Length: 237
Ligand SMILES: C[S@@+](CC[C@H](N)C(=O)[O-])C[C@H]1O[C@@H](n2cnc3c(N)ncnc32)[C@H](O)[C@@H]1O
Image (cartoon, rainbow, N blue to C red; front, side, top):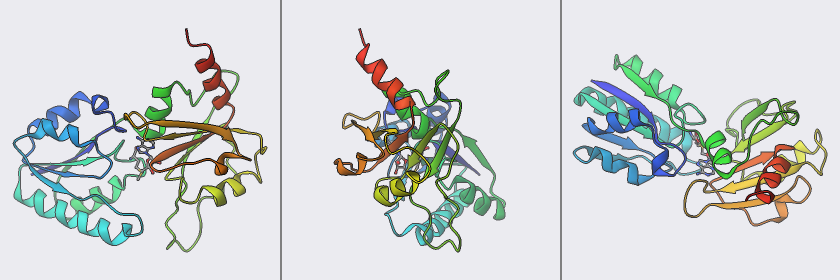
């Protein structure tokens, strides 16, 4: 009885790790997420499949149900894979699942995945750091748990590049906050459904990005590295 917490990568099924594939091949059951590309499930052809995709607005209750499912499966089978989009620890609630399993004496192993936060910009040629332009980046949620007693996200980040996950729903109010600390002309790039055939790239500035048609799942990347991306695009041979 081991539960493997496995990152499935950002969408392109070829961006899953070899270690993840090997673990899926020996799985008895796979508990998988909405964002994991279902093509990856083919590596676990002999395993049972449990879908636990979450819906926005029903996060906390649903997470407890997922924890329960993992505990039940972990007690029943030798090898349970909990497959999650991107990396399990980047806004993946992987830590909560581990703690719940450990409380029941179920061992957990973790296999990292390519997080969308870096893998998606890298795939399109947008470097989150660039010599002389950006020496730091911050990855932040655009959708903080509304039940928190105090907001943790303050938007006054000093990092040269800001990468926002889950950033579409509250884009307007978050951009308004960011403009208190950054120039409205700061370049912005939004990447929708990165590394998939439906990928869309939208560029603009803090001042005008909210006027564009943007749909989830998407990353919002803010900072001068967006100009480096444009330069890379323009100079493509
Ligand atoms: C709940 S978080 C999970 C992140 C995941 N653990 C990771 O490491 O990528 C979901 C958010 O990740 C971002 N995301 C995940 N996959 C994406 C993709 N293929 N393209 C753009 N954004 C993506 C979106 O901001 C989405 O709202």
